[in-house]
Length: 453
Ligand code: PEP
Ligand code: CO
Image 1: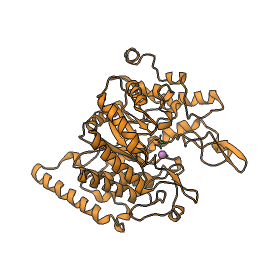
Image 2 (image 1 turned 90 degrees about the horizontal axis):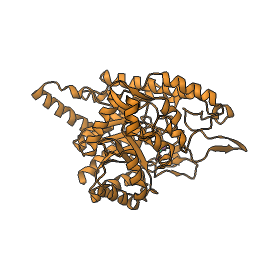
Image 3 (image 1 turned 45 degrees about the vertical axis):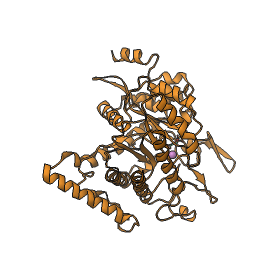
Image 4 (image 1 turned 60 degrees about the horizontal axis):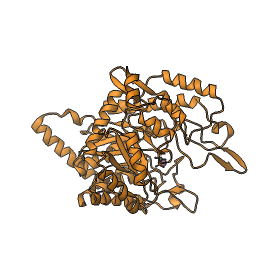
């Protein structure tokens, strides 16, 4: 029954129909039988999220499209199995909660929180191989595929990692859900989310003022209305780049009470910029799932390319279905973004526009670090708000790479980190992330920007 309905709505689509298209950024597994065995095992394991949650998120994203909510989506560029630890998970959750508190307070709007976690284990790479000292090995593609160490053994794509990625995602999900359900995210107790820095940060006073303001409003409302259940817990959803299609396919399921197919490895998968070709395998896979989905849009995308992509991924113009995450770079956003906004608006298509001010602003320093300048990130975000305002469209959220740790990967910010500082605590295996202080500062800047208009 479900299968029939799906075939009618998505002609020719099955969870494996992507295999008939060109699939970029996939590893070359040596042993097809070993891969098939891992996929079969994965397909029998329970899912990580439910269709009810997925549909609830779609509904909430539809509200963000209407300007009634703001989306905060953030987390590591790449999660690693080694970082699946209690402090790293809880610190990341804390910084996202703190940022959302700042945004709720400043924007006077509900914030929709989506983590880039519990599955962000696959990375697109610019080259298939890496050469060091005359030795060439496969590039590191994320922990779901191979290991980061530069040895033949670590770099071999290992199908057993599909199972380990599912397990680590489940461990992460379980801990996040338990923290949230147990009261960690209770608005009456923002001190639960304090990170050590709040004591000595230049931003501490401003953050404390906001927390006190929210506490006052909460007490005032509860004096009038009694305890308000919604403030004792918040919703948290997960997302990742659904890059490794064998993994995604194995966790694509049908469920008893909802039609069609759901990717139940995450609530909100997205297609990365490098794999968003209209005739490619990723677009084929995504068109058939019922999740809300996102696509990263870079500066080379033209309106003539974007419109067929919207038609393929959201032919019915369903509310909440499609988010476009633009990542143009601070220098290109003013020319690259307006034509896309104008076309989508003119065609009357329903999308949620979100700004990723990180990925278009990556550069290398003279001492060999991949970094991003806080000022460039901020500038892209400022431009994004202005450009949307001028186009009469709505910027409904931000997509950030960040961590709750005290890393030094992006330059600038309130402590003005320099090239030299990058050596102190550069931990990212892939892209440079905002540290907790830079993340919070960005949330405060978003509020100031929106208040200035
Ligand atoms: C990412 O989000 O880590 C990423 C690779 O982004 P993009 O596809 O925009 O390069
Ligand atoms: Co990244």
